[in-house]
Image (cartoon, one colour):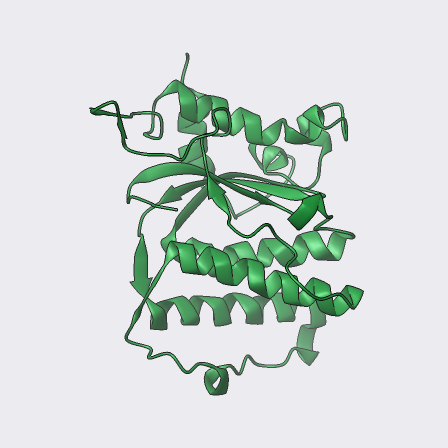
Length: 223
């Protein structure tokens, strides 16, 4: 996937051979922690939805690549917060230095971060289920969600404005992400589904993963 800074992307992937990705609440929560740890250093979530066998993110890219040291620091901070929330005073400190052979002064890009997130989650589910092999499809995709083509900034020699703030495509995409569970006949209303950011936008949950202010700028757009 080719990302450009200061652009909004619809990123998604599904289980390999349509296999299930999430089996219980703990799985969804663990994946959300991974999203916070691995991706927030690169930008902001505008909307998200975790379905039983796939996921959708609407993500605003601030940085295509960052210093690996800063990337690791965020992962460790978030992981420790996850352990504190789950285990309380029994939470163990994060100790990953011995496993990190890559130089800390190198750069890590968003594609690598997404891949590492999926690998980390896959390892946890494989351990839980006593499985092996790839859990996700080989390549996570960044598409427009409606037309099967990769996102580019140029279309027929002209700038493609779909993924800039204040256009109707961002509005359509945000609603598409939130209505996924309704379209799949899992719930009747978008706010009935726990595993999306719709509850946060409706004020029914104090979620902090999304930049709701940026998202509301999109929702206020009138096509």
